[in-house]
Every structure is written in C-alpha cells, then in structure tokens.
Length: 126
Image (cartoon, rainbow, N blue to C red; front, side, top):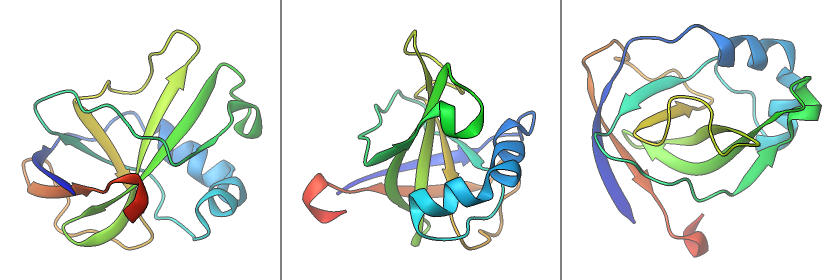
C-alpha cells in the first residue's frame, strides 16, 4: 500500500459533476455504486501515475476524444475512486499531481485547504 498526503484544492469548473449527472447510469455500471456527483481535487505535490483498474470510454459519455480512467483507493479511510481524464495525446484533467477523487459517501470536511490521506493499493489488493 502507498499512502500519500495532500491538500484539497479549490473546486474546478464542474465538468466532472456534469458528466456524473448526465451519465449517472454509466458511472454506476462502471463502479457498481451510486457516486456523489463531482470530485474532490487533491494536490499531492508530485506526479503519481494512475494504475488503471477500469475505464469509461469517452464514447459512452459523448466525449469520443477522452476516456476516464479509474483506480480504486481510499481517502481518509473511505472507499473511493481516483478518476483520471485521458485524451489521445495522453493529457487531460489536472495532470498527475492533482488527484481527482470520488466515492459513494460524502467526505467531510472537503473544503479547500483541508489535509487528506489517500491510500493506493497494489493490484492484488484491489
């Protein structure tokens, strides 16, 4: 297990919230659960490459040029998912130093400046 600490950043432009509202059934099918809409953006201060567990293809959410990669993790002990937007050029989202996290439970506090802990697991423990 790898544990990183980070700081919640200010909220983004709401793109992930919009996707998660418009295509809630796609997200539920992919994760097996109803997620809180949107993500918490956590600056971990270094690039951490995503270890993809599964993905939502862009064609499933009317974004054919960008997939959403998911990695199972925990944030402050809650079961969660890291979501990494990835386009054909290998870019998207905030980059790999800002971790976008979502889960089926409301994480509090979640305001900018709050310190959190994210745990990533080896493939055989996910």
